[in-house]
Each structure stands twice: as C-alpha cells, then as structure tokens.
Amino acid sequence: MKPFINEDFMLQSEAAKILYHDYAKDMPIYDYHCHLSPKEIAENKTFKNITEIWLYGDHYKWRAMRSLGISEELISGNGSDYDKFKAWSKAVPYTIGNPLYHWTHLELKRYFQTDLLLNEESSDEIWSHSNELLQREDFTVQKIIEKSNVKVICTTDDPTDDLQYHQAIKHNEDFQTKVLPTFRPDKAVEISRPDFNAYVDKLAETTNKEITTYESLLAAIETRAQYFHELGCRISDHGIQTLPFEPCTKEEASVIFEKVRSGLTVSHLEEMKYKTHTLLFLGRLYHSLGWAMQLHIGAIRNNNQRMFSKLGPDTGFDSVHDYSLAKQLNGFFNELDKNDELPKTIIYSLNPIHNYVIATACGNFQSGQGKGKMQFGSGWWFQDQKEGMLNQMTDLANLGLLSSFIGMLTDSRSFLSYTRHEYFRRILCQLVGGWVESGEAPADYQMLGSIVQDICYNNANQYFEIK
Image (cartoon, rainbow, N blue to C red; front, side, top):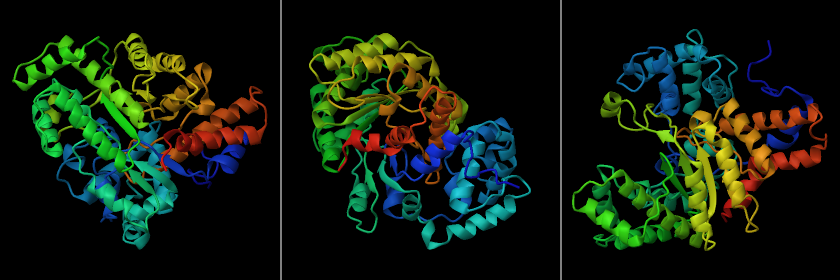
C-alpha cells in the first residue's frame, strides 16, 4: 500500500509535482517568526520521550483533545507522559479534516521515519520507536534544526530579556543556524492590563534608569531596542487585539501614562490614544533602525476565565475576533508615511474577512524602497491550514503580487514544526501548478520555479537583510 505521506502528498497535477520536487523541496527555511526557546537551543536540549517534544504546551492538540471530551488530566494535567501520548494517539484518527492530522503524520514521517498511521493500535510501537530515536546524538535540538535545513530563526523576546542565550548561540561555532531575537514590547503598550505598572518597574530595573514620565518610558524602550539591534535583531512584533488609531499628542499620552502610574484607571478612549501614540513612536523607531514591523491582529484571548485561572495564557482558550480595521489600518500607515517613516511591515489577521482590507491597504503604501515593502502575512494561527493558506495566497495574488510574498513561518513552540514549511510549499505548488493545468499560467517552469523558490526562501532572505 502506498504510504499516506508519500512523495506526491497533496500534489494533484504534473505541474505541481514538477514545481515542488524540482524547485521547492530543497529550499532552506527562513523561520522569521516563532516562539521557540532560545534557552533550549543554546543548551542543545534533549528530550526524554515523544510527549515532551510533541505535546508539552501544544495548544492546537490540546483544543482537539478537549473537543473529544478527554480529561484535562491527560492534556495539561498531571497524567504520565505515556498516558498523555496514548490519549493523543486515540484522538488522532478523529482529527481527520483538521491540519493536525497532516502535521502529525508529516512529523512522524520526517523525524521518526515511520509510515505508520498514529492511532490506539499503533501507539505503543510508535512510542517505543520514537523514544529510542530521541536518545540518539542526532536528536538534540540543534541537530533537529540542522536536519530541517533551517538557516535563520527569529525568536520572540520581551524588551526586558537579557538575551544571554542568544549571545551563547552566537558564539557557538559548531552551530551554523542564525538565531536572532525579535523585539516584542506589547507589555509597554497594553496600559490597561493589571500588570502594566509592574512591567514598567521591571523595564526601569533592566535599563537601570527611573521611569517616572512617558518620555522616560520611551527612552527606556529605545535603549532596549538599541541593545537588541546590537545582537542582530532586525524584526519587531506586536500581538494586538485590534489596531488602535485615535489621534493623540505626546502631552496627552503623558497625562494618560502618569494617570495609570498613580494607580488610576483610564477610559477606553484614553487607552486607545495611548496605544496609538506609542505604536506610532515604535513604528518610527523601527524605521530608523531598518527593522521590519510585524502586526499580529485579531486574536481575542483567554476567553475561558475558569480555565485561564487554572492554566494561564497560551493554553488553548483564544479565538478569532471581529472588529473594524480598514480605516484604522490605512490611517496608521498614512501617519507614519507622511514623513517617510513607515517601516517595512508585515500584517497578519486572524479573521479572513479582513484579507481584502489588508491586501489593499498594503498596496497603498508600497514603494521603491524595496520589493514587497508592505506584506500581507501568511495564514496565521487558526488560518495556517490548507484553506486559510490558499485564501491568503489567492487574495494576495488577486490584489497584489504573490511573487513578492515572503512566505511561511512556523509561529510554533515545537522543534518538530518545520514540516509546516513543507506543508505550505506543497500547497503553494499545487496552487500555481493548478493555474498551469487550467491554462491560466504558462508551463514555463524556469520562471514559475524561480517565483516558487523566492516565496519559499529568497524573498525573506532579501527582505530582512540579516547578515
């Protein structure tokens, strides 16, 4: 019987097969946004079993298991690693139609060299086989990264991080993959969160300077950005529920900041004003540093209060938000562009109804400063599945230039998730190959193959200018 994950998996036409096997398959990976642990990379972590490398903290799998009524004890609780793996194995056949089914078997095939389909009957054999492989010297974190042909990894880091592990990786001559920090100052932007003042105090401690005014807060943020820049950072990131755009002077932002520092609460309008002014400051700062700015918009987080109180954030209780975006997005871009201070920008939306809004807004602010300066980012989170990826790429092709797209990222905490790049590349080649088969694109494989390779790696390598 032909293996489920075979060489032509998801490739339904001869054109798609040519594009994938001859052009996409062997391209390196440029993972410009992820949540991997720099500590685990620096320390070249090993894993005691497949549950530790595969299930710990994977809220995609956790959500699926909860949907099947599996006990939380076997998801995020105190169940043994073996019992948790068994529970996941029982769940896998019922994930058919969800990208988890494909991701699971791609990872088993690529990293554990098995064609077995994971289910209750095969679970013990896969458990023993994978755990035996994990004890080998070529299953350390660094070896997995090298095996996956990853050239650049950009982690996600708070401005208060000391980046000691990035420094350690940088000085490791035996590990060739670049691992660089990404600047994510969300906690300095989210002025209405209960921990805002504690965070400002932590930032003051990190910079060894008092933060008593809004101006001193911005100075502290800039100091940390310069520190990140010296260690190779060239990308920022923001995870925001909606994009604020309320006109606000520096004086107004200062009053709002001081109000919160004194223990008072602010109105929703004041919150939006402060966020707008601070994000515009950050956009100008990124432009001056030559960075790219990532905006991840549209997640409404921690919706299950009972479970959030037990497990905390990033445990599988977030969802897609609905909100107005077009006016704010164009206004935000325009305000930065007025004095030519708009940085290279990648904007991702969790809600597909905003695809046309984002793609057309990006088109308003492209420039001769570089190919694809304004990027409609890849299918993100709930959209990084086949339909979401196809919608994002098709909408980008219709309204912009797919050929300028910087491609896929993992956005993952798992070192086995690099197969998501393979998944994306197969979907990309099937899309473009389909155009050839239907007569909508010429069978010029040299031209189309070059575009596919650009999307897989070359565009990102050029876009971020990381040396």
